[in-house]
Image (cartoon, rainbow, N blue to C red; front, side, top):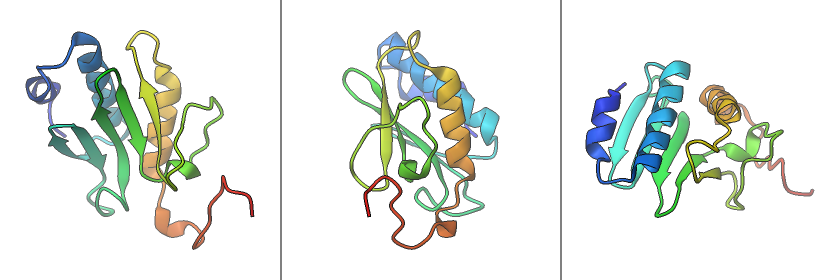
Length: 135
């Protein structure tokens, strides 16, 4: 896992709120999966468990920088329990949530989503199973 300082250096051009959101997501992923592989890109950070596969088969989450928010994305988010209704999106099976402010973000619910996605093995899902679409 890379350090918070490396995240700060990569994204020093961001406003304080979006940078703090990225750092909090980084800390939550580190708590859930300290051995996570981290790929920093100019548009955000991708976290996955390389011992189980790559960013798709073993994705933990993606923190993507947008002009007015940070988009927290889950490759297989359609399979996550989401009692707070935080996830949006229609591209199956990816789901995401917009985090528009550090102080208003539901961090406990976000940590639950990150944890749930970090242990999800998409290979264990039934083929063509789409839980949020009518049959």
